[in-house]
Image (cartoon, rainbow, N blue to C red; front, side):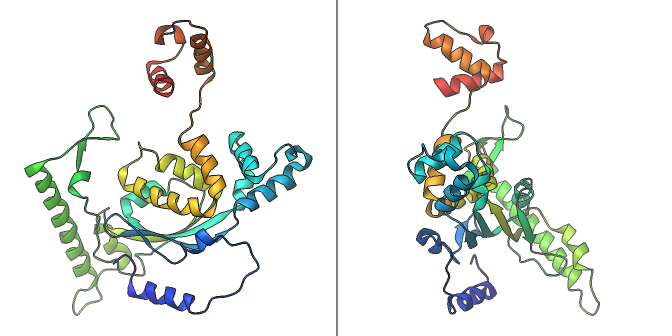
Length: 301
């Protein structure tokens, strides 16, 4: 079950006493409030609160630019202009607070985005649940031979079964020892803040994560990318579905310019111009490194 009985009770209590508001609300986002979107085997993402909408982005931009936005005839066009020209501050007028349950090793990767406010479940004060991320068989992949931080072919048959058994047994054995250290009968037991160091990185933690839309888009551009690690990408994908219902115009512009668009270097633009003129351009005549050339060709091919 993604949510604990205590969390469900808290949600029911909040729903039982709805409050009128004069602030801007978004029907699509209101539908997401309090609902936990399952992710991985025990994780979830749910919206706790949000502020602003597409119109808040435009309002902030028009205050900032004044007459400079008169040529933009509608809010969607203005938002696309802001995204196209990398004007970030209007998007910071929108904020969202999420409750996320995720494996510790995913959390350590996630926290590298240092542009949000975070409050994590404390294993110094509370006892962590016996919940571990155990990958589905089709997510068990060998180390890539060409990418030091990537995956290769999926493990098959007896090898996959062997790895799954190791993950399950090691996780449960570590938790047994954790539990024994803090619940030693007849004694005080080891301090929770010390006992937690014996737990594996695939145990689940939880946090509240509050971020503005500009920085959320930066997170999603990296973590919802096809090259991102699967275990964090599925969280980013779930968040994307929520953002579509919150700020549809801003998300559409983000998807067009950041997720599916491409950025060329000065050398890339020059090579493209030469190609359009009919000139044969190779990596050797482009002035690019092999890596740059490969990425350039993946955009124009």
